[in-house]
Amino acid sequence: MEAAVSASSPMLVLLALSVALLVFHIGLQGVLSTRELGSQWNAGPRDDAREPKGALAGRAARTSANFRETYPAFVALALALVLAGDPAGWGLVGAWLWFVARLVYIPLYLAGIPYIRSLVWLVSLAGLAVMAGVVIF
Image 1 (cartoon, rainbow, N blue to C red):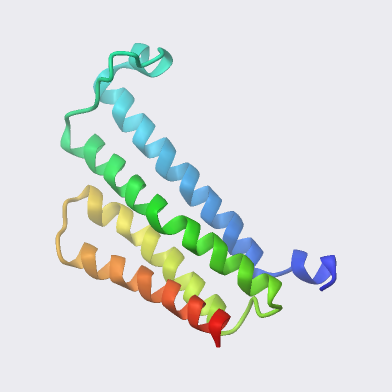
Image 2 (cartoon, one colour):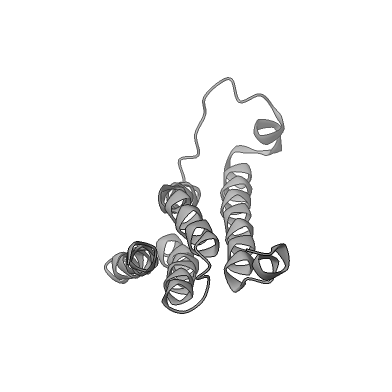
């Protein structure tokens, strides 16, 4: 595989976007926790093990943790598709399904919307399953 071919892969662009989504999760969690616990807590060593108690900061932490549970699988499958020379087609469709579902999941979780949020999470898993199917078959 030539470097020029892989560098122009739409899957690599999506991987870069997924890193931006990861950073967004971390930033959102940090901002909401800092709003609740204060900037001294944020800047300090956090030795006192205080955790935010508010609903929004807690939801941001949980949605970030939930994202990080499936993120390694997404990265591995995306790289496998690139290495296999099939970074487009159904693999790319699955990757976009995962990415868009993970993006939509954030406001649904923050708003406390049940059921639809779970359905969106299942869509993200379906995206991973599509990607895995392309890699396997």
